[in-house]
Length: 154
Image (cartoon, rainbow, N blue to C red):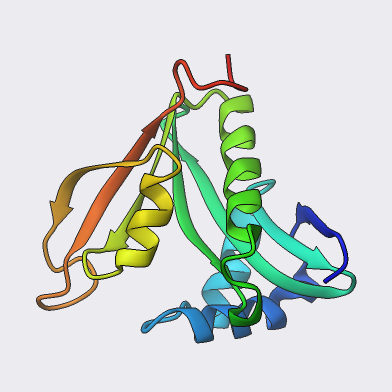
């Protein structure tokens, strides 16, 4: 793998992003929703590029000018556990902070132990459970990271 570059997503990236989305989630976002997020999440829809290949992406939005909501983050299966998710998350959090957010949050399936550990190791903490968030009897944890006092942000 050559050097990874984190940058804004472009419309031309959407097919590769959709492929990563489909291989990563049981209920992937459809192409049309990913395309809508490209407009809605201006400056907060990021990709990890390895040359001309997209190997990961993340989507965030700012709500109420103070909280960053991580909509989705994933990397292609062949590059998982290589630090690409961490790079994407760090850059998204940096942009949230620059836009005035004091914390970020996300939802994660209560059964996705790998993702929960990933976020926990990056200072996210479970604050509540959203029952049936992913469908009937498929609950989600809400995890939050407070930026106050975070090194690199203050």
